[in-house]
Length: 410
Length: 193
Image 1 (cartoon, rainbow over the protein chains, first blue to last red):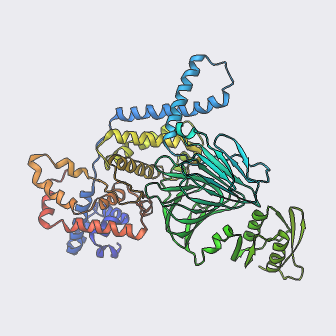
Image 2 (cartoon, helix red, strand yellow):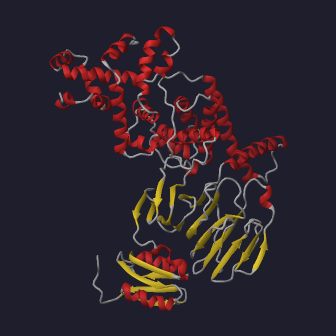
């Protein structure tokens, strides 16, 4: 036998499955009695353990079969309804169904929508990308407005009745929001090479980086404020303890009361990165059942990276949060950043595309600072020097090659 | 024999057998789990149904699991706590992880209370079980009634491995400390089997 068992406390016995298995095997033989006689202390512990186990035994009442059946009927009906919801939308042009059947299906679809409205949507489907070169504001009504400037500003007035663009034109909002149960969303789409800033109805300011999209309502009705983000944005959220502010990205949901933080959630990147400048926020994974993923609390000057592959969140202290927010002021500092990441960002800021020779880009870490107000030509001069590469600009394409004299690095 | 991963993936993939299969194997367990939080059976039933509606609706965005019961219990726990909190209007409790007084009652307790002849014995058990906090009862329930590993408990209760172990051992210890020798004898007296 295992001698360590003789030293066990009653608690250790209860919590060790191997011990319990061992004990039950042993109790079928004469050996146990002998062992207990020889070790009175051990015997006492076993008795205590047995009592604890008896106390813990939960004897469950049976569940009524009629309850089980009644719930199943509802769930099975919901399942059929949900499937037929799809069927209707897909085949609505087929009129061969009898009217009666259609009405029944439509009623059940309505039922589905009614349920759907209760929960807040997990993700917002942005309008698919087009090759438009300018930033655009797409109103909930479907109306599209070109924002013209490279750095456009959008501001929703405090009552959510109008939107001001680039500090001059004013657009009246529809009264849609007053009537419908689901808050219609406006979208800002910022292509590569452009930036935009949005002031929301509650005074929250959002700076949108190149290649980003934000969906926001005219007005924050209900008990929470909710926006959807793809790409990178810096938020300065107006404090309102009664209405938490949610930033939903496809993978991560960030909840705040009032703070400043930067979120980078580009589709092409493998990580969703949140860097907190002030206050505290909580993050969780955005999935069908949000509940399994645990909540991560992020404090000021911390960075959370959610990895899309292994679905884990890593939190680290960030000595210089300024690096992550400098883009709002037109700077792009990078410190020991893999070359690949720097090039990826330059592609976004300047709407260019790098074409690499075979062995490039390397995993080398580089540090430096780019002024994003400079032209791409100036930026490339600096970057090529730091990265030790040669380049050739051909319109929107930039061909990159390692300098010949450079020895190959690991 | 189908394993949980396969069944769950089949459910996500929309195979017809999976939903009734999962439902029939998990519903009673969920129902009993619900009773640990509330006596309101309508609320329990509503919560179970809503959870399944949600699973059906978001089938293709659900994560993977190799332990369906654990997956459903986690989901169920959050849902029912939310429902209970919203019904009680517990103010603006933002954090889902706020300590919530879970009512895990061992039926050992219920079963004996009310039977006049056994009142004295029941009192002893009451005293012993009262010695531990609701959260300790909760963790003991997961550990010994649901047979969950510490890793799983950590996820359910949002705590780390060491604190989970510590909490279990502390709870067991206070149970043990309340078993004084005369109680021990008393407990033996109404041993059921």
